[in-house]
Amino acid sequence: MTVARKAGDFSPERTALVEEALLPTTLEQRSIGLWGYAWIFIGIAVIIATYSLGAAGIGGGIGLGTVILTILAANVVIGVVMTLTADIGTEHGLSFAVYLRAPFGVHGTHLPSISRGVVASLWFGIQTYLGALAINGISEYFLGFDNWPVWYVLFTIVQVINTALGIRAVEKLAALAAPAIIAISVWMYFTLDGVAQTKGVNIWTFRGAGEMSLAVLFITNMGFWSTLAIDIPNLTRFVKAVPGEARFLRRNRNIFLAQLVALPVTQALIAGIGAISFIAAGNWNPVEVIQDQGQGLTLVVLLVLVVLAQWSTNNSANLIPAALTFVNLAPRLVNYRLGVVLAGIVGALCFPWLILNNLFVFLGYYGAFLSAIGGIVIADYYVLRRRRVDVPGLYDPDGPFRYTAGFNLPALAVWLVAGAVAAWFVSYAFVIGLPLGFVLYLIVMRRGDQGGALATTENLSWVHTGGGRFERRASATSTEREDQ
Figure 1 (cartoon, rainbow, N blue to C red):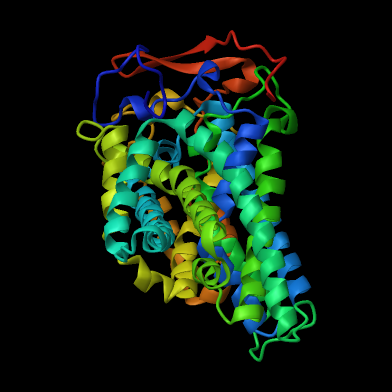
Figure 2 (figure 1 turned 45 degrees about the vertical axis):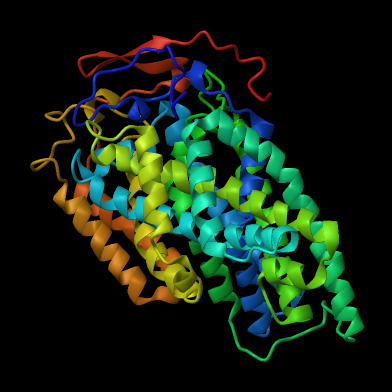
């Protein structure tokens, strides 16, 4: 099973623009329901680096309650942006990199999409490093073997194999990891609160000595998920939609719990735990805190939960998006499984421990350029095309998205200008880059594609019939059990 299709399904010929994993998913191929998608997002939200965001707010002189509410609000806002881009997957079954062919050109797509793919790979490396530290803690406890680089390599390999098995394997891991994530968070809260009380510290009244503004904390947290906000179609193309439903809220009903509740609440919880960890132990890293506070079997179980949290995030938020951008770069040479392997290699070689030491700088600069892509995509999909997309043209090297030798130069210029301006004001990157990309793109493009069509709204799916040809076919999917 690949990321897009089951074994035995029609396998298309591979061309410069067509590969099995890049084809639109049909309504029948979308297997993830409301709760399955929510579990995935709980897993996604638990990036250990999130703990550092909460700690930064506390260290910056902001109270715990305010830190949690600010991070919750920031993630609700990014969840709304994510909901807008999600419809590309819900309506047409398209992946992020393939849709970028519309605004940027069939070759121009590679510049912004690979920039996202590389960032996803870097995050994979960061998560794998933190997970490897937890595995090393288990190994040291049981075997007396202390060598995290060995576990770093092995953990990389295991995650790559799991993700290469396809979206169902990812969903199953998320269903296992989500309860584990909740458990570790509850334990850490009570344990760390107890540590703080023994030191005579009230976690709810503590104030750090720094001076961080709420705006910086808010925008930094938005930038944290700017990657997922723009490439969420990579996941929503597998989420069950309501066929024949023109109303946006009902057609996308299976995504709201995950993106507007599970993500903000879990992210705020995890960042809050990081803040409490900083108050109680002066350290935001839960792996090290667990090793200091846990003993015996409790220590081992909690470290296993840390590993599961990193694993579940890497599968859906990092390896799949990165793999699809690499497939899109060279469909004749790279299939989905090879794309996953390439993403794993790039991430493993990125020296993630150095990135962690400069996390806020990393978040700011990549968030600047990725937020500009988000503005361009929203403007292109909703304003210029009114959700009607010429999907066959996305796979036609000489079609409407060829522009100038495959590059839409004005759109690429908008991306670079909006991204550069946002990077210049890096503390406010996301709230500058997205609206600026949106406005500038509409100015330079002016008119949209006139040959597009809808799919899910009309109870139809885009189906590749061979030779680069597509047609819309009626779906047999029932509308009665779409949220299960």
